Length: 377
Image (cartoon, rainbow, N blue to C red):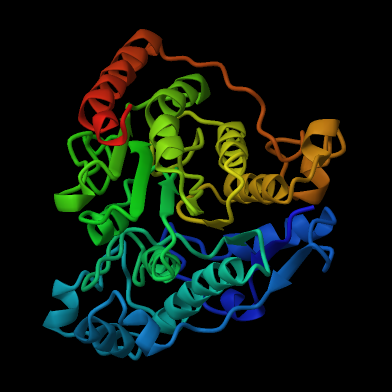
């Protein structure tokens, strides 16, 4: 059984984004409750690890001192024109009590996960409170204040390891991409809804890295309505060959659940089965994995998806042997779907099957042309 660490602690449950904000940090605690109720936190090979806050020196490996000063002051109610210019005080990045403390604790969890992998204490680690991939070195954006993903990847890469960052959140990972755009020891692969229809408006096929990092950024934009079948095809034909060719030493994967059908902020039509399949494929590499949360604005669906992701990372077979069937309504306290963690299979609809397939085929062709030659493919 893999040594699996779930990164969470009670401090992460004490600070919440404002009620009117779509981002609900309570998802992590609900995920923890779900997996514990299923016996997937047994204190042995599957254990919980309470993180500490990232300290200033750790944060400054990526974020600028002036931004951190403004961010820390903002949680005390001090927001000036500099803070506004840095993206604070917007509906996406509201100012609220404890925001800096929460962000540094979530970042500390991802750093702890990276270090547990490096020490060999864990084979896989999951921080459901992480995945703030939009934060820039000197700017907040998209509910993200501190970029825990960048900090964790930098921690891993600093040891000489080749790091794959795979992002299956529905939004493009612009902050992470910018951080590693000119590096070849870090490969960034993102499957996301196209920037033509969704924030942050980036992540097109032509964004492939620069300088010595050319070919080490891979963007796979997906059209509105993309379902499991189309997503699997895009992953198999565009993402997996370059991941396999890169042959990373360690994997960081952001498993935002906002690509699920019915998410109020996005327009894909996925089930959580495809997230589980992608994670299973990453496990085939036989390398340590740090997983983070991310988006997901239908709380119950997100919690169920993350609990499923944890069961896959733990190599738990309950979801495949029928153990969980019928537990959804009772154990997840959710009347929407009583069939366990896995979503029911959704039939594609809307009459857009041909248009979706054609657009994804064009994307795959572009990536074959722009990226594959850099990896001998």
